[in-house]
Length: 438
Image (cartoon, rainbow, N blue to C red; front, side, top):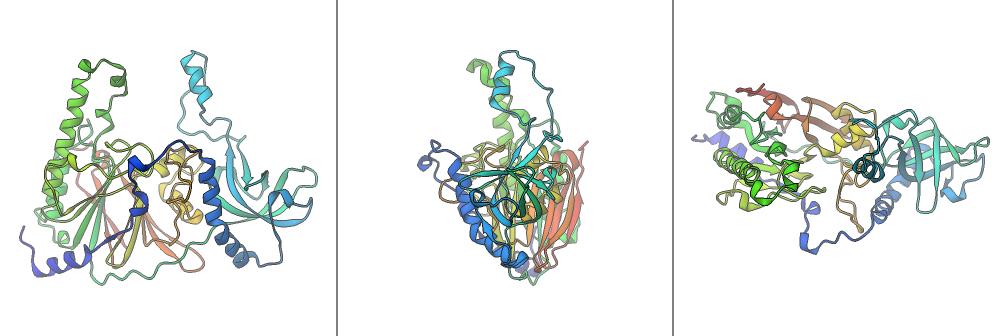
């Protein structure tokens, strides 16, 4: 496709993105997994401490004293800072897994572990206290740092009666600076090698981006972001791990073929537009967050237009701050809360100033000791989550003027849908490329 002058200008200006994902990258050989996760929670709360103090002063003033849990006076109204721990009787545990191996009867398989018996507990560095009152366990997960105002219940010592809840404050970002109607195309869950993958739909996506379908809007697409699950989970048969190597040839061949197809597809796509690929839950990357970039050996040739990035991913494209992940944090929060809508979960994560609060409690992550890279310090202009059940978009805003477009990107293999976002107006539009998708 021959690019005209306007298209050249838009794509040249708007692809000067400064990736800000370095905090998610690490040298695997220099990392240790011997440390405990308690330090991670301590680091998270310490990082939020000053922020929460400022938020308390902004929301409630200085009339109510801020106490440590061990210094609470029975019946005195005060403010406590700490990390939420959600005690859930139905939460899976290693003891239940051992029971399964020993053929001890267990509970049926569930996709949500909440119950009416869930209890919220606030922890600081020294002590913990049970939270009751105006706070609902259904809307919280373990790992959220909050400030709560209330008093210890005189009739139930050890229980703190919450009147109000305050969250860390995000710093606002400057207004989006993009002056052109450039667009970023988001797609996730192509799942090459799987039964739901549609080669025709994948080719239609290439044709759409290149403008071969006669669509003028292709000229405005300055980057494609592929948010995880390029390879289908079907090529990773867990039962194969317990078989002899000579019986595993078909599974290995399936994975290799899927990766070859991914490489060929990316070579076609990058002829027209720069592409960023993020690993997902089923891709050949590390299982813990943050997932490291897919290895260059997966791709046939070096390609300057292909960026293999981490999951999560953060960048600045033409003055628009973009932050997102391949969907694991949203999917995990759905399992441990009553929050079901992906966009609502993303808004809650912005309230909590943390994109993956359930890590490391119920979602695997690296045991950081000096920093928590999942903390959101500046409010992004665009927040996305890949591999969701439905396509949705809505705007997050707070009382001090922070605005963010939240986009739930569905699995392309199941829906044939991807999303175009205009970087100047921060408006979004679905693109249906069904092919032979079901």
